[in-house]
Image (cartoon, rainbow, N blue to C red):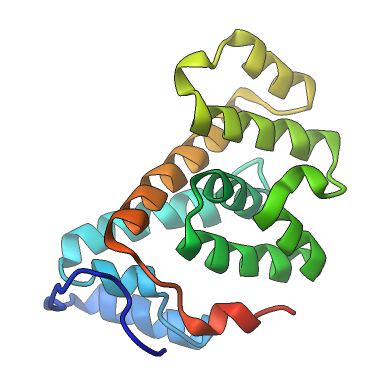
Length: 187
């Protein structure tokens, strides 16, 4: 990791034992502690709330695959021009799909990718929720059902999109920078 990780000068706080263990697990599995976690490390409670929600949405039980959830993260982050999330989650799409070109297409314009009708419907919903949330209507949910999503899946799509809209805004506000390692992953 080189340079600063955000524009804010927040000193790291005292980390709880569970948080220290979580950081060690990140080092073991990823080879790094994501900068998003380091930026939240000024307040262990806020960090735990963030990681608990993230882990539930992205790794928990769902009718959505891990790849589909990462695709939502990238599509939303593309609309919001979130440098941090596009870099980190673009790498995750490359890794989970085994397709570096898909990761790049997702970052630039998911509509350029050769996606299934299911994936396209999911991402169009996530984008509409990002750009015009007040315009979501029953027809939008019906389109997801038509594409094979259950009502629980729709909840997960909406929750994942909403989480990344929040994360993108925090990242933009503090100029959060991705770990350098993400740029070379799964290429």
